[in-house]
Length: 371
Image (cartoon, rainbow, N blue to C red; front, side, top):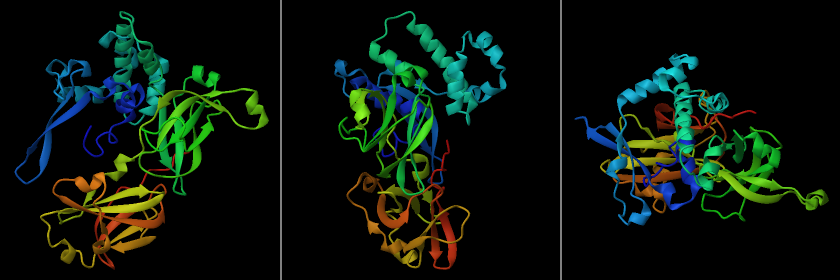
């Protein structure tokens, strides 16, 4: 999890333990990729392992535990892909499990685009609960597992502000009263929230905040304490924290794209609600400024438009030297912060000359979700 973007590139069902257990145990899991060069200066991941560090109380440092290291076999991925083709009524017989159909429905609401993953998680949950019935489980672990289907996200409004989206809140919590709260980052304390809203008894919903969109923003679910104070118009009192979402980075949209034919790449990101771009230039590409002398980066409101909102010459990007992104081995990083408001669909493109010659375009920023 130590490389840039490694945590944010993982889905919520992988990272929710890291954000919610908040104990020494929450940061032991690792995914290891073995890569090899294919002969054309390209690297291919040919083996994947899941493992974990030894427990902190064993004082073995950062060594990996060989007894809890497993190779992810290609056949497992094929089985996940084939799960949707199996009649759900046959799964209990094939896998010797009883699937909770309420849990399966909630999983399908989240993983509808990958039904095999939803079914796999339902099967795993069944085995997990069966194992729990045979052992004593801590109260914090039980709380975590009961809330594991809650999903809290930060998205983008059409005005460059943070939008809170929630789903999967169980009825037992809705009956108690809960609220969603926005924080600057996972490290922010409970007294430094940026915005909040009651969920209004809705298991799924959204709330547009007034907070400019920035990397690191995080949504948390809290109990909403009602008292006589509320009837005087002072709002609800903040209660116990229940669940945390992942920090916002929109990693799927922040992956750099190659600039065709050159040792450089282009990345779209957001800062203070504005659309920004980075250029990653390989250090061996020493003549990049001469090569890109007439090149420019355009900011577009959507993938389908040919008209840019704003632009900047590539050689006028500022060198970035004081951030995590500047410490990528083998590359120099340059950045431009535009005045264009970030919104769903925004895209940047790299042009070799003022009148055209597109060499790269990023995926459009997230799609607007309606509730």
